[in-house]
Image 1: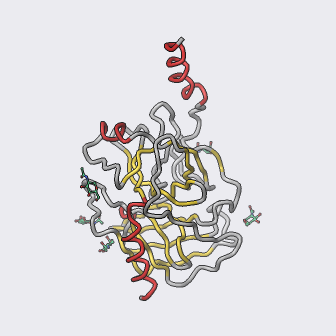
Image 2 (image 1 turned 60 degrees about the vertical axis):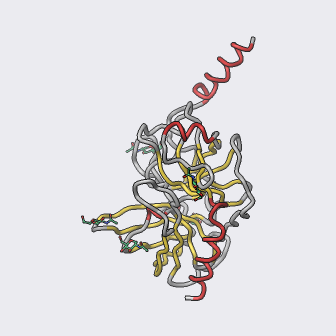
Image 3 (image 1 turned 180 degrees about the horizontal axis):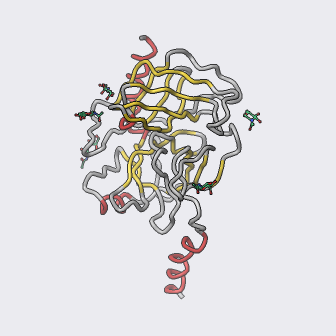
Length: 247
Ligand SMILES: *[C@@H]1O[C@H](CO)[C@@H](O)[C@H](O)[C@H]1NC(C)=O
Ligand SMILES: *[C@@H]1O[C@H](CO)[C@@H](O)[C@H](O)[C@H]1NC(C)=O
Ligand SMILES: *[C@@H]1O[C@H](CO)[C@@H](O)[C@H](O)[C@H]1NC(C)=O
Ligand SMILES: *[C@@H]1O[C@H](CO)[C@@H](O)[C@H](O)[C@H]1NC(C)=O
Ligand SMILES: *[C@@H]1O[C@H](CO)[C@@H](O)[C@H](O)[C@H]1NC(C)=O
């Protein structure tokens, strides 16, 4: 009986996963008004990332999304449609000073926008966690982005997927550079659904609070993936936001 249960549990995720799209589904337009689309220039190349509005003129994203020029689009759903969007240049980039390309710890960055965004039904800020918040294994939260679909073409419309937080051991087995006190191990290895390229910097949202930032994948390409654990960076966020608000 127990064996049967174990068997069922291990095949269920596979049978429920259509495997058709990397992402879950298209979100209801403008139901995630904190989402930001980042156009990044770095070394004469162009990149895209996700981000999220945490104050009228401050966007949070991943440190690895830094570049020489970053332009933020707010209020978008279908990137081909400019109605109600606000495109604002980032005038200051503050990646965490402890971020390193090699180990990818502290993959968090704050951007100061050239002007305050106009807050309306298309553009809103999202709440940040408290230091004492601790996202636990088994918790299911939502990540959204304009990143790649299963066929590797990027999406015009904002997509989202629910992902399960994994036990730290799973990510520690995959890399020595996983630190559960500052990172989250996210995504069921038995499912195909995951974040794709272009989704970096986007928020992992639990009960309307941004608890994680899409950071990186392991070399196998399969889930789980590593997200930045935002609640571990509250002192840095407060300090940096204060600095940006004064400047
Ligand atoms: C830009 O290119 C230079 C020279 O190839 C390299 O040293 C540098 O690390 C690159 N910068 C980034 C941010 O990738
Ligand atoms: C962000 O990236 C740009 C371009 O690569 C670089 O010039 C700048 O120093 C970076 N910012 C910080 C604070 O590292
Ligand atoms: C463009 O976006 C606006 C606001 O979301 C929406 O009302 C409108 O129907 C969209 N237009 C097209 C052609 O999809
Ligand atoms: C990729 O998949 C999406 C969603 O299924 C579809 O709309 C799009 O046309 C596909 N792109 C290509 C190049 O096949
Ligand atoms: C994990 O990160 C915390 C916070 O930066 C640090 O104090 C701790 O030493 C790190 N643990 C390991 C094993 O690197």
